Structures are given as structure tokens and as C-alpha cells.
Length: 339
Length: 68
Image (cartoon, rainbow over the protein chains, first blue to last red):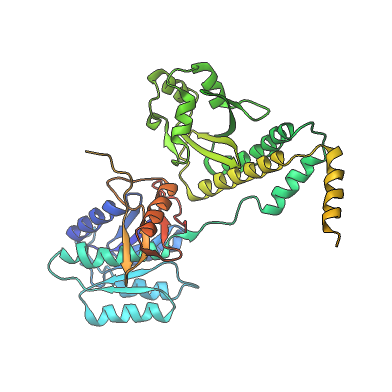
């Protein structure tokens, strides 16, 4: 996320960037001291991640290389350029004491369907802390977030996936669950890897008080880690304790021994997230591990989708009927529906 | 002193919560589930949280999203 600011005063810049960093530590702020520089930048940049533009009007003359002075232009030049764009990009805050030109900039932008806010500087830098920041904060919070994207795997695809699995021969609901969860997890891991690099997703089932085993056909890095470290630091308990707590760095895992944490780090795992897939009395732990951050919104939406797909597989497994009993159930239903 | 459970900011408009976020430069909580829990707690306390008010900003700067 970026903010573009036309402001040539050093003290104002320091105050603005300091205030923004307090609330938006991830925001990259780009300052400009001349309208042409800002317009040139915007012409050569895709601007997709720009969430706010703030414009002063009057700018100080810039010293040239020949001892001459260069006209920096005004904020009105930028407002005019923005208003000529095909469509608005993000909210614009006009911060100038120039009443006439400030009003003109705002009107020009609004006429071209931009969301424009007006802030009038006062009391040296105090207005940045109060008026300007309040307007900027609300403008970014109102504008930037989007509704969660549509599920990565639509419901029809999930149903199709399960139906295709049902074509095979499974002796029990447990056998079906294992096959279904393996295939579902593989499909989602492909999506997750396209978003945040090296990711593993594992499904674990409780096999005794302190022990989990893989509920999938293959073992992932965390199941292997769990087996290798044995009961040192009670890894099974760790997974339960951190379930539904969002993505955590390895060192944030509670009560983990130093050697156990080291083993995880050595295998390239930096973040772990545990979700509980639950249907009736059946539970499984979905453990996602990655070398990078799992915190991105689309990554989180995908992990939730994966958890829900696993719950569907658990549901089908729980209601598994051997083929012989299916006809009995059908007959029973027919009988019950008779008048 | 107990550790912070969650941190962010919110805007109240006419007694209703217009937005609630994880925006905090000091704590930088990066957990969408936690923010949803904050919204649930606010509702349990009797606040009206407007539709689309729960807004999560990942600390890596990736696009923010509306959770609820």
C-alpha cells in the first residue's frame, strides 16, 4: 500500500510520516516537491496499490543547477491531471491554506467523480496531528479494504471432487475420508503456494491422549517433526493450544522446547496456523505451515475454504453407508413417504 | 502487566461502530480471527457493529479486506 503526497515543507513531511507510521506501519509514503515530478511518476507507475493522495497547493521555488530557480508548479496542476484520468483512483486530500485554489482543486476533482477532502492547515503543524490525520485515516479505512474474494474453490467444485471420489471403492467412511482429505488438501495447497510460496497443509487426527497421526495418505513436515521430537514439549498439546489463534511464528508456539523449535526452523518453517475441522463428535486438526507469512487476506480466506472442504469430507465419512445398506435406506424413505 | 490481547482502532458514528480495525503501529496484530473476536465482544457488550465495519489490514502491506 502506498500514499502519494505533494508537500515540499520538511517539517510537515516529518510530522506526516511520523503520524502515518503510528497507525499504518506498512504504508509506503512517497513525497514530491514539484507537480511535474508527481505527474511524471504517476504516468510511469501502475498505481494499483495507491490508497491515498494528499496535495498541497503552493510550493517553494526549487534551486536549479545553474544558480537559477525552477518553478515547481502547484497542486492544481496535479488535481487537473487527476481529473483527466479515465476513472478515479483513490481518495484525495487537499491540504492548503490557499482558500481560493484549494476550493478549485476540490471542485475539479469532485466534478470528475473523485472523492476529495479538504483540510485547512492551522497552528503550525498541529493540524497534521488532528485534522489531516483524522481525514486521511478515515479515507484509507473507507476506501482500501475490499470484500473477501469469492471462494477459491466453488461449492460445485467441492461437490464434484467428492462425487468423483465416491466412484471408487471404499470399504469404510474412514477410508473415504482419508482419500478425500488427501485430494482436497493437495488441491488447496496448490492455490496457497501460488499466493505465498512454500506451504504445507496437513490434517491430523487424535490417536491417543498425547499423540496425533496424519489423516492423509502422506506425511507432511509437521507430522514428521511431531514423530521425531516425540513428547518433548508436548507438541500435540501445542497444536491444540494454538488452534484457531491465527498464524503464529514458530517461536510464538507456547511451551515449545528450543531444540524442537530449531528443528522446525531448520526445515524452513517460520509460521504455523492450526484450524479445527469439526463435524458432530469428529475432529481433525488442519495444520498449515509456511516459510513466509500466512497473514494475507486471500491466504486466510483459502485456509478457511480448505477447513470447510475437510469438514464436508468428514461429514460424508460420518454418514458413510455400505452399498448394501443404501438400498435399505432408500426403501425405508420410500415407505415413509407413502400416504 | 498482562500482555495485550488485541489492539487496533475504531470509529463510532451516531452510537454505531462504523469501522473497527487492527491498525496499531505499536502492537501490529496480524490475526484476522482475533479482530473478528473483538467485533463479537463489542456486539456482546451491546454495540451495533455496522455491516462491513470489520476491516483487517495485513501488516505485510498486502491488500486489506472486509471480514464482516
